[in-house]
Image (cartoon, rainbow, N blue to C red; front, side, top):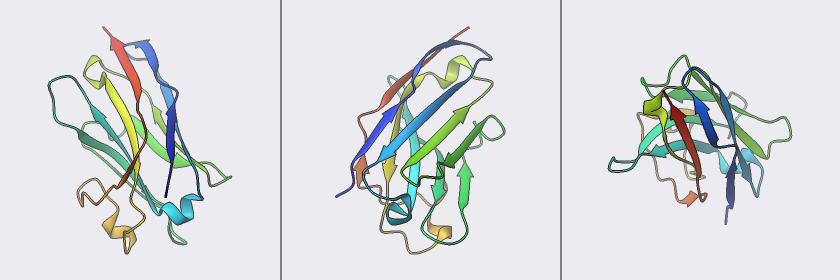
Length: 131
């Protein structure tokens, strides 16, 4: 059983920055694949970024809409995954969730494009960007 808890959301003006945190109940080595997702009212949930932490090489991937502005990383403690969001736009406004997929077999299976079976989810943190 993996428990996740997001924090760091808030309200900022366009162009501002926020750093979201996802605290995990077990080592990110065991959770293997952590993803950040977001869902805006009336829209489908979309994957924003993923990080593979289940091996010697870390792997990250990003949605086209955030590449170059957002950075996913893990803390040295191995119990927290961050999403640094710079250059925020009003269209980034959404509830942001982190999720874990401990079933991935390899780094290539942990990506925005691959999808995955994220069976563990946090409660979400709201990000609001005003113009």
